[in-house]
Length: 195
Image 1 (cartoon, rainbow, N blue to C red):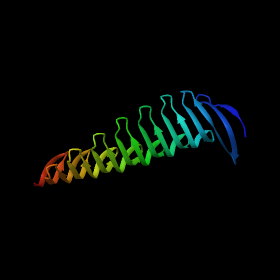
Image 2: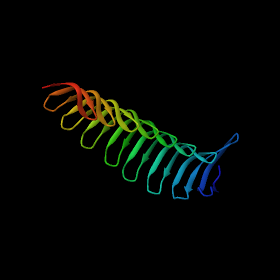
Image 3: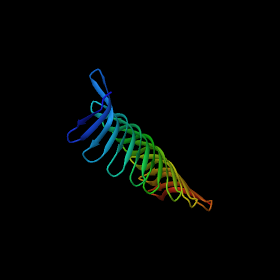
Image 4: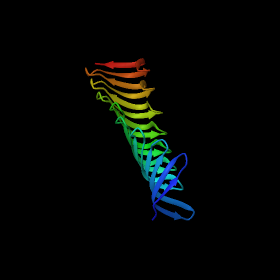
């Protein structure tokens, strides 16, 4: 058990309060203050944030969770200064895997991420009550999915670039339905409207 302050040069200073040497690896727990004012408290391995820790950024953004080689990696929660947050899996500093995100405007997303983008299956709930559940690709609604509007309208089918595209069925509040083809959000090609 030691108490010591190390100079990390341009990076900042670290105060460590526990140190252990395993083989040729140095691991310790401490507090690192960066030159930009950020503060990290947690575990280190070979001079990099590794294991569980918490990082507070100058604009009061906070990440608490797992780190690897100085990056968010594993499970963790990020909270932004304006109320946005993400709780879930990370890889190389980006959202990757299953997670739950709340944006600044109150929009909520739960589902899969890849390389920091919504990708795979997920669900979005907008603040006006609109709900989409289905597939995403590179942060866009794309593939098979269904969207329900507060008005009572509902679409089930294929999507591309955030718009109805391909085979699908639109259900209207007056109980009529349209089953057919869509292109860029509009009815296009063969289809059948039933009252």
